[in-house]
Amino acid sequence: MKNLKIALIQLNVTDNPKKNLSDFIEKVNETRNQKVDILLTPEVTNLITSDHKFRLKNIYDENDDPFINYAKNFAKINKLIFIIGSLVIKDKTSSKCYNRQIVISETGQIIATYNKIHMFDVSLGNNETYRESKFYNAGDTAVVVNTTKAKIGLSICYDLRFPKLYQDLAKSGAEIILVPSAFTQKTGELHWESLLRARAIETGCFVLAAGQCGQHNNEGRRSYGHSMIISPWGKILTKLKNKPDVCYSEINLKIVYEYRSQIPSLDNQRNYKLVTK
Image (tube, rainbow, N blue to C red; front, side, top):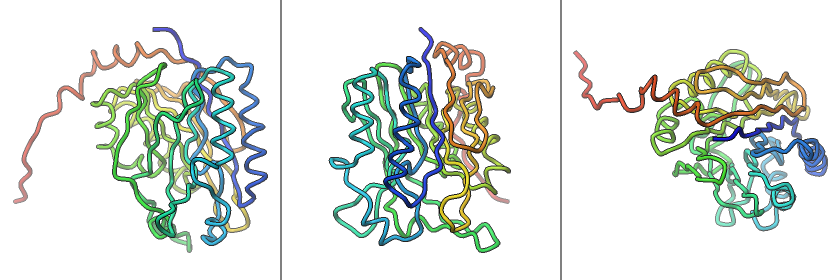
């Protein structure tokens, strides 16, 4: 197995769609001469706003989305797997949206999509409350996509707190798991790295986690950043800080199989009953 070069793009997305697209293109183009095999952007790459009417007016469906169109062309020209961590995508059948991950092949075709399953409905205190289910339709299907480079398991942000999803992805063949995110500053400081390393260790997968960073708009919402790539052994191979940037690392998928042969926890799982006394 040859080494794969991975690029993670970290962004600070706001409620300005034109600037978001410009910033996206700028960071994507930084990778142009790096001979990247797989490129990943963060969750909600296209728009962050608390105004749902504004959101609905400034998003697209897959066929018309300018981020997707640019990514398709870039992937085809540069012969890489381009994963848009997620986009806010219009649902033509309801007043809600989808938080959708888009996987694009080297030929510039969409080969898989994933709608975020777990909605971030939490109250963190100090008036910091999120209710994604109010504005987004939850997905109901986990996805492993078999690309020319690797078998890749898809997930988005809050999914990270549900380990069974990741074990199911690994059992279904995933060698790499994606966790594009807009992790809050508060929860990021406490849990981001620990959860990512745990998911890598539990599954024996490489984990690629591209994040949003910094303050978004004037609403007080801040994202933690610290995008990183983690090996199956839980080792951090590269990590960013909390500003828009790009990081790279080379990975070799043989490490996945070496790790699983030495620590076969996925194979050792047993069914059991639970009693309360």
